[in-house]
Length: 340
Length: 115
Image (cartoon, rainbow over all chains, first blue to last red; front, side, top):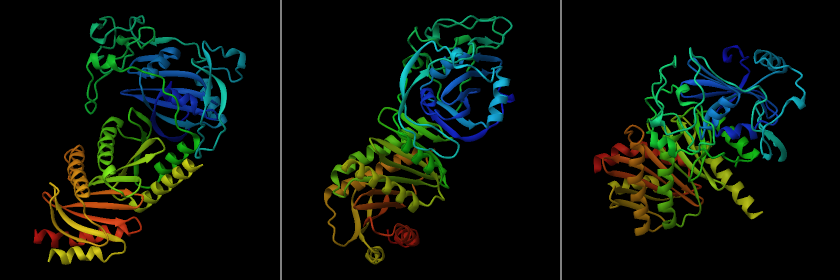
């Protein structure tokens, strides 16, 4: 199904908690293409309303809740926002077998909650959208069904320690390992059936032990960045030589734009931050603006950003003076905001 | 002789100090203008040197090319010269960074020859 969907106009690749998508697409019409390890999927969205969830890994296909739950079982997912024209969107609806004129009443959310919508993503600009409150569907409109494409269907199984799950011989797709699949520990939270997740460990990503996987608790992440923040981050990312930009705090990555693995980058950023925290009290040079570490491959820059921090990965050819001016401006804006 | 080279930095606008320092914080040579290199500053520089080298190593043992730490009033640029020796420039934030880094690269060989 993914291959049949119109391409759309890519706004950019990002890494963020799945919930971020739903709170930042109020005026977005298009498809969010999701990549998790070797699998790929999508969320068809019309103005903040998810219409279809789909994920495919090998011969395994998940629709509706199954796909949504799988997305939600990851603290962050990597995705590409692709905007559709009305024609492309109509085409996508047909491909997904959805009636174009779906009455609102057909959208029967199983759970509805008021949630502040903080931002909205549009094609090339991130316009300021007032904070509004609207009901957000937690579940897709499309009739959800988990459809493992197997010779013998495998029924969803309750969450259990990964080590305790044995591969079902009936599964047409062999279970290579489930250790790398993030699993929520709470049994009440549905998780993609283990046997239906043939996740291959990626060489570059350390494979987590079953115990480690269990400790990885998914907590729905609130959107903590406001519209102007996302606009600023997006603008910085568009500069020549910027490979990736992340907003992070002591606990987690909040937003990542760029095609990099976030964990190694965060580790380095936090090490640099620790260095600045050590030296700042001993220097009476004013407030910390940024630290740039230059290696032959490029630069890593960390800088304070509101109550969080920025980490910018650049090529070696970047104009450091330009970045420096931006960071200084950001800090001046912050100081100005503090004074107000 | 090393002082003469360091003086080339000091004549640049708003540069306050140029020093060659060892990774353990020991200052080999320095030229200053309107700034005192206190023990705390020396320790801070040593921390930056050690931590940055370790951080750079996380990029597949990449050699450290330069470290730049900026505060609202002043900044510090630190570049490895050879082995455990570093050239450190301290300047007011109105100084021209491009000019400083250019001079650092230009004079690196001359500094190495004197160490």
